[in-house]
Length: 100
Image (cartoon, rainbow, N blue to C red; front, side):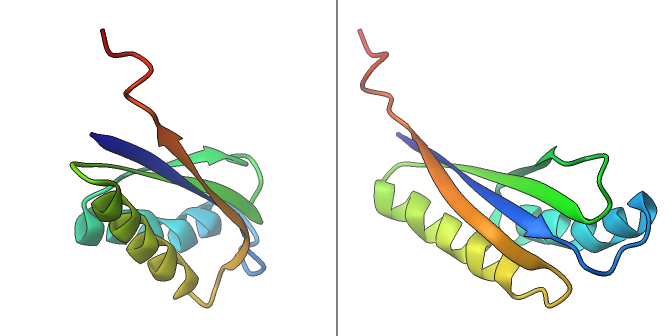
């Protein structure tokens, strides 16, 4: 089992309110959830209308499958011209550590 999380830190230059921010990031979150079948959440900067940190999680039977899904998610996020990607990183769950 391979589990990984992609975290993307975004700058949102256009929104003037939290309502506009939600309107900007919802298509990203819902689109990734629907198209790539990943778990998604806004994990930081919830109270700032010009910043967002989004997390996308996947579980796969092979490392290559997990990487392929998160690569697709990252390309999807970059495809939105109304957001600027400040940083992106991945975390991997190592299931070997907890096995009996």
